[in-house]
Length: 144
Image (cartoon, rainbow, N blue to C red; front, side):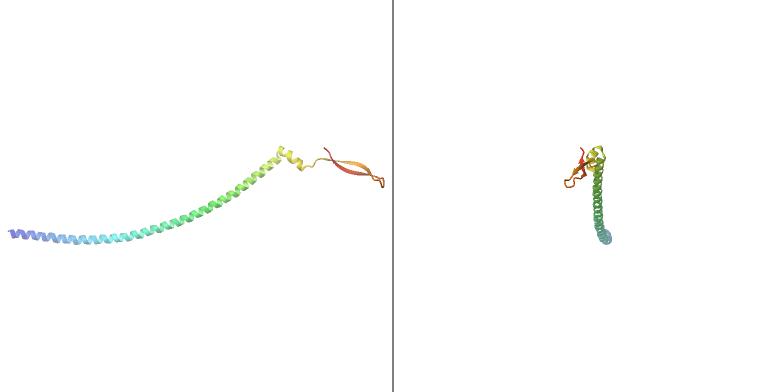
């Protein structure tokens, strides 16, 4: 009987060992498949990261172009505003000069420059010793 028990134990142990071997082989196959999937995922990740880097470079390039275009437009607008501001100040100066000239105070300054003072004409008789003929001479004098 002891031999039959030993044989049964050995038989069960052989069964367990064969089951463990099968499980070990299956685990090896699962690990191989898992490692293959990990390698494939690493390759996919590398491709995706390269695409992300490529997109990042493209976005940076386009943002630099957009920034340069915006800066150029801002400089153009600033230049046009400066020109308009110069014209505005020129017009404001001209309007202030014209309004001063047209005002009563300005008229006091401008009128003497534009209108000559009134002159009176006088006639006087002069004689020359040679012919003793009286000729009228016209002389202009200023009336104050």
